[in-house]
Image (cartoon, rainbow, N blue to C red; front, side, top):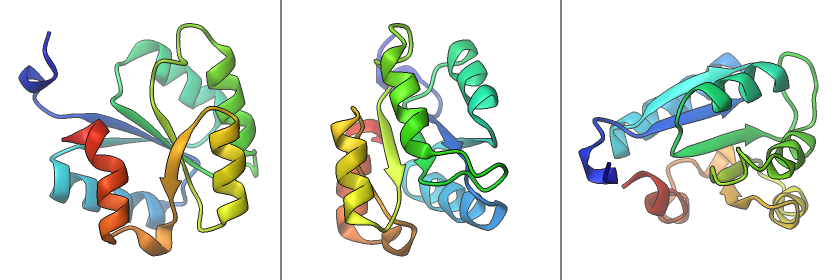
Length: 129
């Protein structure tokens, strides 16, 4: 199946608070026609990634629901042969956290403060266009 035949790109948003998830979902839906699915915990997110196909995973630096580490989640995904092919980005305004995420196997992400900025669009385009 070619990427262009899919109805809508699906994005898994992990660990965001309700307001941030809503803002990300509105942005990705409006800009790319993407469908954004929320997961609150590591186990919920891993279950969803194993059961459904996602074009991209967006991970909060610190999960809102339980304080889990987004970097630990990235490492868990990268350690799993089945899951590591799914692109994953950290959602954080902190450059040092972004660098750690890339070192752990993520692609360079973006911060919530720069959601509508051109560089964020450029980072998302390869996965969602």
